[in-house]
Length: 237
Image (cartoon, rainbow, N blue to C red):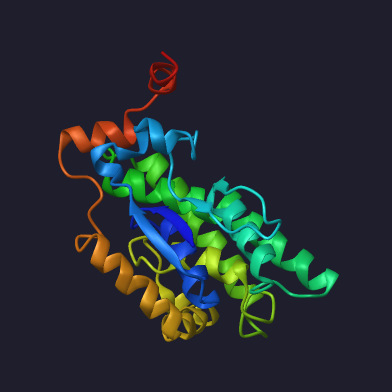
């Protein structure tokens, strides 16, 4: 059994997508980030960066004590290693998957996230950061669209690279026109049609029916966007 500490964000969806595809038993432990539950002491023992997702695997392959893992990319790598699924068997295939996984966690996620913040949550609308992240997100969409020009999935076979990228492409609030990215649109629709994808997003609906709404008022905004070094230092006292 795996405990998944989760909220209905793109990074949270990555892990339910994997777990559903792999057929692993898991138990969702909701962490409502809009209410500050990511700062509770028991969660910080598992995820010291105050962020979801995180997992605890009570049946690791070494047969030893439970293992906790935080950071979505690290969790996907861990689960692929545990199950032998959604990762190519050959060296070159593994390298390609890892390249695109790192691309997602270092580029696609952060840039799309910054655009979403400045376009939808910033207390004042500033054209420079909004335009900057809009253009960079568009560039990254084009990079992925090009990669998908002659293949069904990012690294030929469906893998953790696709699982990592899909939730960041799915929300159509990134200011992009999918008519300009036909390969990306075809890939997105293919993954949406997978039964495991539909099950994963059904779980999200169960946990948080208002999944598009993370910020609910000033207190929620401050919890999500008003953090600084003091937030961490308080937990050390």
